[in-house]
Image (cartoon, rainbow, N blue to C red; front, top):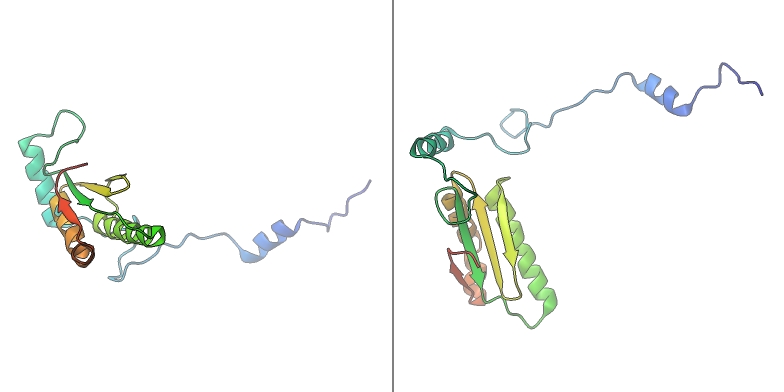
Length: 150
């Protein structure tokens, strides 16, 4: 069996024709590179972290409400139509992801309750943003909210 020296693999030909591959970095609307897929930390956020570190960090894992972990629990999610319930839960979940902006979250759901926890130095602000984003849904469906988990 002989091989023709001019017979090269198609993938090698494509790579040679295209040249070396380059990696492009996505750009944010303000013109800076979007390395992390989220906005950089503000000076206020850094100041909150410094202040909290000076006060001391908790010894164990974060399990209770405080400056680094806040919860929003929505009760009363009973609905007769399962399709509508799934859509409502999807809207709640989307609002939670938007409010968290890449921060670590805790999510626990039962048939009638959803608990969302957000960790970070601005967790209370993020939970308030989530509550504000869901205000119309909460009012329309008569749900109750609280700041304690489960």
